[in-house]
Length: 331
Ligand code: NAD
Image 1 (cartoon, rainbow, N blue to C red):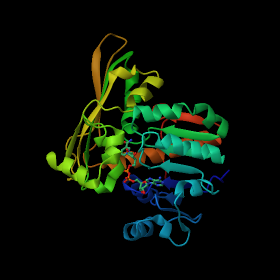
Image 2 (image 1 turned 120 degrees about the vertical axis):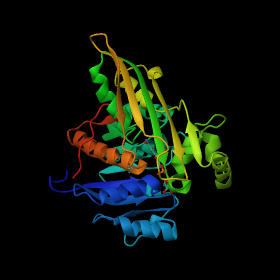
Image 3 (image 1 turned 180 degrees about the vertical axis):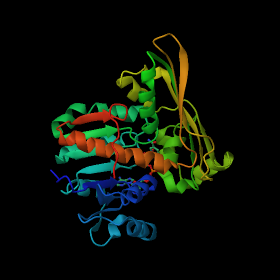
Image 4 (image 1 turned 90 degrees about the vertical axis):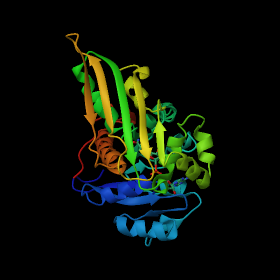
């Protein structure tokens, strides 16, 4: 167990939009040290800590963190090789969930390796989070504390809904609407592909198989915007499992602008319920328009990593969701 003063040794799996943002965020905090990273072509491990700016430069110029010096390794199985190394106490999983079974398969690899520690994801689909629930007994037996759905939605907004619910005796509706603005879709390739999979006429397999040219052509049709309604989003099961309301009462939709960092709409969650006195009312929690997707995903995910580490040290293993645990502040 690390001493009270020693920072938590953090690994980041996936070094795209969110992975890079998490690295930058963590480099500004003292209680966590970023020691490991993997992308599709390689990985790097350095117990003294990785430097976010240098890592970003190498990844941009050479296409993989495997070229980092020291500690970089090029590999066709970067995840498998990194997971097998000691020295990482917690991982943020910033990987694409393509296909929809990918994250559950990665977790099985941690289990097979006998790795113990904290895992936090920002998974979005209901069916993906349900697959993790099937692994509950294995996670408990294997000594892994896993927090799922810990981004913005699911994540920050779901947790806000879980807190706001307490004003009421019955929750009638939880409505999440998010606005995302990014300068170009290539900065968040997996996020955009996974969002396209929610459009009418698309599914995960179809979105995964699209070429970059096909994605650009699709985005051209709507001036770069994706309009998303009634998404299969795990906020619904997460609130149901927390006992707050049946999943049918939770809806998620949003607008993503892939050509403008300004948010096309304000992100909010509305929680409508009936109080014990019989009054019906709505709480609304709105994110500041200046906050980016990266800030609203990686900030909460880091807080959940810290919470997971506290649970882990107390011997609490298994699957937890963003609605069951309060994120903890990281200095
Ligand atoms: P991205 O496409 O920008 O980056 C993915 C990274 O994973 C890349 O570095 C890539 O090399 C790496 N990778 C891919 N396959 C790999 C493999 N087999 N082994 C090792 N590395 C591999 O992804 P992103 O846009 O940052 O999104 C990451 C995830 O976060 C997506 O699943 C997305 O849906 C999710 N997300 C969640 C929220 C939320 O609020 N919950 C918000 C945004 C994104």
